[in-house]
Image (cartoon, rainbow over all chains, first blue to last red):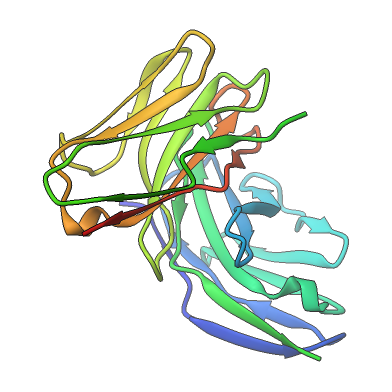
Length: 114
Length: 114
């Protein structure tokens, strides 16, 4: 069974600094996607960044970047120049490309200190 | 354009009752997925529908059922409610139900069972 593990229930970062959130996953599939979602207290889940497994280049979206280690089944999220608005629950998720189901980790609560 | 809309926002039921949750996808999206998010955990996949047919089902009992209508909106039905059904129920829509297309989430329905 596919599983997603986020080993850091809570993380904190000082405003303007960099933080890395960890995620590992388990799968026997070769064609899949990995995602990071942000869920603020207002609760709408927002896609932050996604990575296609067959692409070796790490995805980047402005201040957000990933470190995708396929052999190690690791997918960490780096947030640079952290802002107060980055405070939220962050979920790592996995899904097989030709299916619509995503498997989520249990999340990491990120606090940003002014 | 309107995002994914879910109704109602909040719902309180008692054990043994039945509940229907509704979801309208983004215009043009033909796939809808349902997730259950228990407090403190990541979302768990319940169902996916594409073109009005069930495409995937998670590990939930038969008390949970869903359907998709010709306009691509969807209903999630839960019978014989249990205390453990208390959760945030999320709906996500995408163009064709494959993960190479982004999923867009609604704000969710908060279901409380007394």
